[in-house]
Image 1 (cartoon, rainbow, N blue to C red):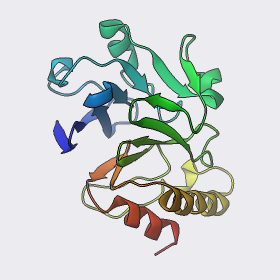
Image 2: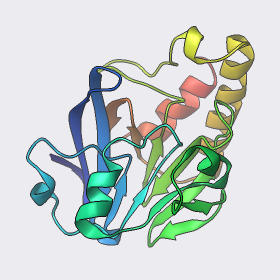
Image 3: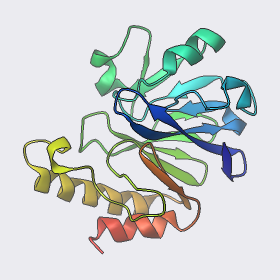
Image 4: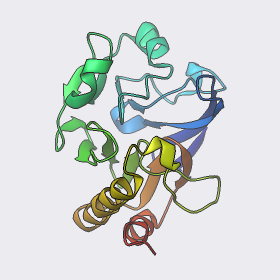
Amino acid sequence: MDEIAPGLFHWTAFHEGIRQEVHSHFHAPSATLFDPLEPPEGMGALPREPARVVMSNRHHWRHIPRFVNAYGIPVLCHAAGLYDLPDGVEGFAWGDALAPGVSAREVGVLCPEETAVQIDRALLFADSIVRADGGPLRFVPDFLLGDDPEAIRAGLRARFRALADELDFDALLMAHGAPVPTGGRELLRAFGSGD
């Protein structure tokens, strides 16, 4: 588990369902987990007890039941994804404050509930951006982008440019990619512009 900004933690763990390493995050000041798999060191490795889980889209159920069972905490996902989740998951809308220092921002292009989560001066993405360790930002393969991959990519690029223009952030976080601790805003802007 790495602290990539003050109070913001990142770890990777193997996801059995998709047979690859994925990325999870914890914001200690607000005690919020994001798209969590259990850390390899166990739940006790978290710097404090979590108070909630935020899903960046409905596909990131991961190890959430373990955290709910251990801590009795609520789970939040954008309301457009609730139809595919167990009863009791709480819906939010874009623009909502989800916890102190944590808010939901619109992506929506890849799937209706695709959310960018602003966490202090970091911005976290679900599946709309991926990044191999140390590599460039990229999109998921075409077969995961739907019937019109070119239109989806264009829509995502437009949202990335808008988010880079509207929000103040430095770190870029991904559920499927190594974090960018600094310079993430300019990197997202360039990716959105096709540079």
